[in-house]
Length: 286
Ligand SMILES: [Zn+2]
Image 1 (spheres, rainbow, N blue to C red):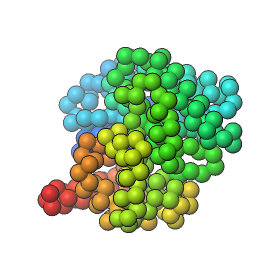
Image 2: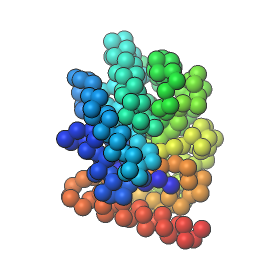
Image 3: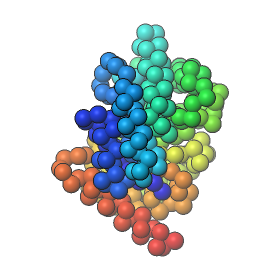
C-alpha cells in the first residue's frame, strides 16, 4: 500500500514534492490551484517542469490532484454546470502536464433538483470531460461524501449509477474517505460496519476500482453528516478501525492519503508514524 499525505503547494507547486519527500511519502495529494476560487491563471511551464524533475528522485509513486470545491458537476444551474465542466477539463490537462496519475472529484450537489437528475448530470459531465481529454492517462476518482444537504455520493449506489453511464469506464475509479463514510452512517469503528462497507463497495463498483483511501479520523458521531477530520486514532473511528483498513489484503493496490489536521509542526509526521506502525503490524501478522 502506498502512503502519503495532503501537502501544501505554498511557494509554488514544485515545493510540494520536497515536503512529501521529507515525510517519506510514496504518494501525495495536492490542490493544483486555490481550492476556493475559480481559476485565475494556468500553471507556468517552468513550474510544471520543475515539479516533474523533482518528482523523479522523490520516491513518490502516485500523485493525486484534488479538484476545487467550487466545481459542481451535478449542478442544475446551466452556467455553473458548464463552467464546472470546462474548469475540470482544464484541471485534467494540467494534471496530465504535471504527470499526475489521478484527479479526485467530489460528486457534486443536486441542489434539491433530485438525486436521479443530479447523478445523470454528473455522468453527462464526466463523459464530456473524458471526451475533452481523450488519450490522457489521468484517471478520475469519485470520492464519497458525508451526505450533508444535497450532496451526492454518500452511498456507493451513487457511484454505481454514474459508472453505469460513463463511456470510458477504464478511466474512472473510486476514492473512499473514511471520515465521510462514518458521517454517512458506515460504522468503521466496528468490524461489522467495515464489512458492510466493503461488501457494498465490492458489490456496487468492485473493490479493484477503489484506488485511493483518504484516511481520516472524525470528530462527529456516526451518521452525523458532518465533515470534521481528526488525527488518526483520536476520533470516533479509532486505531482498531484504521488497523482493519490498512491490514485488508483486498486493498493492497490502493494508496492511502491522510487529510488530517495540520495543527502542529509535527502533526503530519505523527499521523504517518501511527499508520506505518499499523501497516507493519499487519504485514508481520501476514
Ligand atoms: Zn477526502
